Image (cartoon, rainbow, N blue to C red; front, top):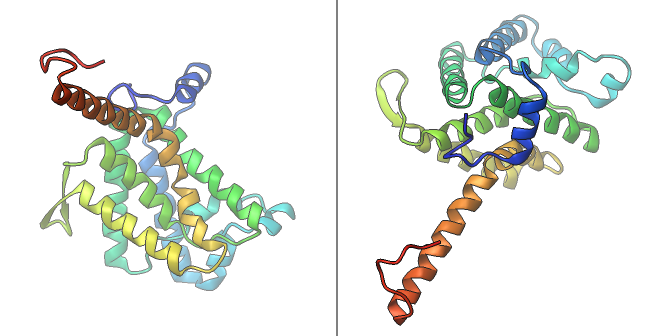
Length: 231
């Protein structure tokens, strides 16, 4: 499957050929399941649950390796009604990505974000207590693939996916401006997989715009005829 309009990063094609069967089917079920378990665990145990689930570089180095995975269960909300909506939305956007990309690329996209987060935590020796940027990263991918796809916000309000992505981007910018150092870089790092995957697509679009503008300038100057094809 193409990444987007046939513009797939070469390194992804290379990995796809060398890692057959790497993808996890129904990845949405695993992440939503982890979120549900984490939600009830935190409700029952409070701060103790947060401390057990969170990604702590120092504690990982002391042997608590489960933290490399369990931080994905840190609940995105502690309000039951909001959590139901979040799980539904998360399941929807991950499935939308998997239907377009297939299991391998969807798994690789999320794994890249997880690895970047772990690298960030170890580089700056910070605890990771929330994974909101991961949801934003997944939303950005789904919204780029199908920007005009309409969802029913709160099951009643029609809302295009691209609008949700712009709102998520605004929150990331807000966090970048207001969060303390070095946590202000957590969101951009966790969403860096988006640029890694979609960089060639946006680069292609910019080149197409540039070529079209250059062609129009040459037509205006009389150097070429308007019906001549652009390169």
